[in-house]
Image (cartoon, rainbow, N blue to C red):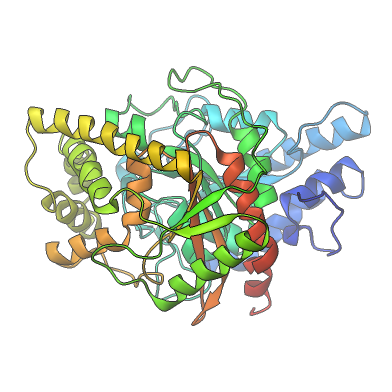
Amino acid sequence: MSTCHLPTSSEPWRWHATEISAAIHAGHVSSAEVVESVYARIESVNPSLNAIVHMDRDRALASAAIIDRQRSQGRAMGPLSGVPVSIKLNVDVQGEATTNGTPLWKARIAPDDSAVVTNLRRAGAIVIGRTNTPPHSFRWFTENTLHGRTTNPWMSSVTSGGSSGGAGVCVAAGMGPIAHGTDIAGSIRYPAYVNGVVGLRATPGRIPAHHPTTPQRFFGLQAMSAQGPLARSIADARLALEAMAAGGGVDPLWVDSRMHYGDDRAPVRVALVDEIRGVELDPPVLDALRKAAAALTAAGYQVERVSMPDLDRGVDIWQRIVMTECKFGMIAAADAIGDPNISISVHNMARCVPEVDLAGYAQAIADRDNFRREWCERFAQYPLALLPTSCHAPLPWGSDLGSVAEMKALLRVQSPLIAVAASGLPGLHVPTGVADGLPVGVQLVAGSFREMRLLNAGEIIETECGHLNEVRWTQE
């Protein structure tokens, strides 16, 4: 278990969330000093990265002043008091536009905070800015005509990830220790992978998802989309998750499920998936799996090479549900933007699945239930799965803009991301190192609402492999 300790660096932007919280609670630094340090870092690196696309500095500093008064008056403080966080552009922050990466929504001003933002503020977090996302948070590549492209701080020729690409870059580059993200096909885990940070996709329903400006979601988003933190460390992700999930607001799909179980830290059997049908894993991906497996084995986990439910089938189910729903609004909305990249990507993905009628859509929902049951049966034997986050190294820009055949191949490369989302399961990306100048890592998956099992196993891997943030910053 990680222990909270005071930071040794004199620059607060370098500190983890746990260190910031400990330092503020102990009175060693003010919240205002932390926020100012992070804003100075943003001013230094964000112009070349374009991860944060909107800031309300006055409001953030006013919130920091409230935290500092609470501390000086000896009043109770939240677990994230004074910790800077960023919020993705697809959820509501009161008084700001929820654009979701499209210029057509510039006037969609939020009348109130989304429930997840409310939860973060109640925990004492300071919202420092909004992070970039592709239009409608759809692609694995964060760029749009409203705000432009978000650059990967490790290598500009490869994607910064998506759709929470701004969030991943924000954390990787030192612009706050915690960033909010959403995930329906890897949109937290993939940006975490390509930017070398921790990314936790919580179980759908764990974190409230109601947003006042957004129409009620179709079934696919309700069942498969999830929120969660991108963070510098497992300890920071744990702290953020508990704050994000602290209340449901008016979200009818929020589940008041217990967070901790007695066996969260117990070593368990682990299903190692190092072969995926129809795609060859890149050597660094295989090396990352072996490194993670060795770390878990040394900690008492029993790691065995086994097969999990067919990931291709999960991708097919995801497509039949989500892409069918996209034909009732989202595809037309994407075309209306006038951005050829989002149109090509969405249409290519839609063409990867045959036309689905009402009976086919209903069958896809039934097939999803069977697919989820297979995961449950496997988790009864192996409570934890270790598999790739993506089968290949971070993708070059535009990898989703080729032919339909190329899109089908890409979906197979990303099948570990998509199939986990189709199953409605929680997933955790943990960095393991750097290969050929780019981050690499692994994905852990467990049963519904067993995020703490993921985080505790992830912490073992992190202890062995270290944090990549410091590696990246030494290259500046």
